[in-house]
Amino acid sequence: MKAKFTKKSIKKINKWLKKNGFAVKCARVDKDEDDSNLTFIIDFDDTMYILTPRWYDEEPDGMFMRCLRELGLKSDFDSLTLSILHELGHAQTYHLFTSKEWEACDKEKEDIEEQDGEEAFFKYWEVKNELAANKWLVLFADCFPNKVQKLENIIGETVKFG
Image (cartoon, rainbow, N blue to C red; front, side):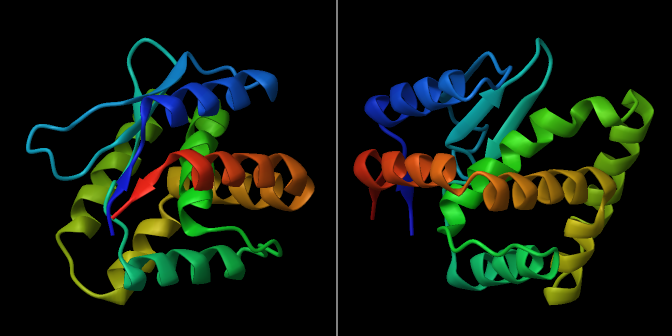
């Protein structure tokens, strides 16, 4: 399934980010080199972009949700909403890593991405910066379900699926 973020959705998500005190420059829509993997970006400094894939697939979404449940997620939000929170979690936990640690995580993820199967998927979520983002997501979603519900409502009302 394809999720298309509209100008209205980006405007409302940026308003939600600002209202909730997140120190990110903006959320925006962009494309990667081959137009296959990106729709949503959170800019949180001058050098880094956080990406959310635009294609959602039942199997990876199910594994993502299983991973979050294993981390203790109690709330029941849509995987797209949680995916955005995961990316926001990178912005919120980035300071926990040195640039060398972040680069090591990226290298580890590149190596894992060359592997296939469910085991590789879960190895990816165990990489330190991915795990930190997911732990932040779980904590935020379970502590502030009303805020997350407002984000989910924005997504449901403004993002087009097809």
